[in-house]
Length: 305
Image (cartoon, rainbow, N blue to C red; front, side):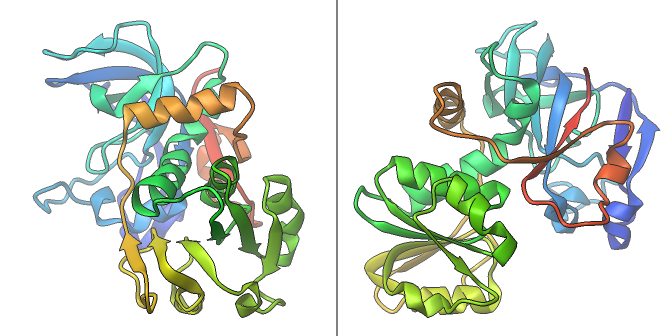
């Protein structure tokens, strides 16, 4: 099968190459999926799990990518809940070969059924962004109707999901980003927008929840804005600054079939829009993943037509 592999951590995405690899076999509780589309998060090439296994042993050359949509072609021993020929989407294990390939072996529990009226490219754009937003807002942030949310990177893949899900839940959303992102963030449902390069962040006043995808100084300044009992949720590692009278939670997103199903249901009925910035074929993916200009939104690789 065709697959993109990485071998040199220092090279980053410039070190990606398209090669031929053996097709994977299904282990216990696995399925093999013929990948039709794969989402990609560039920061994963800085994650230790891209380069080592759970025992910290070198596993290069490794296939990156963790988001997928495709069709089940084989079941491992003991696998239940899915069937051969079924359309699925989900989130692959961090420590195993990933989704930038024509086939992948993945634990069945990490996948959910993909309805026939949802395109594979849309399905592949949802798992990391959608689950990160869902878990950050509702599991870790305990968001309630009537609360206010400061959503950093509101025009990005995660931030746009945060904005939409928070608005649906009855929250008031203040999006942030660069000046060029203003209209896109507002289009995704932000009630107002803060240009982090030209506006004063502190002018937003107090908020109940900060969803941080940036870290650094922005995170520190945001922590000071959280009201008593509020929460700073971050996905960029342990918080460097904590709210004076609130909580700080950092988390790594986990696959969850029920949550995936809730997310795709909202896509089907029009309550949730995907944020796809670029679509490429697997053959052209190496060039597409090394763009000469900044692009907002998720990069999706269409593995099969």
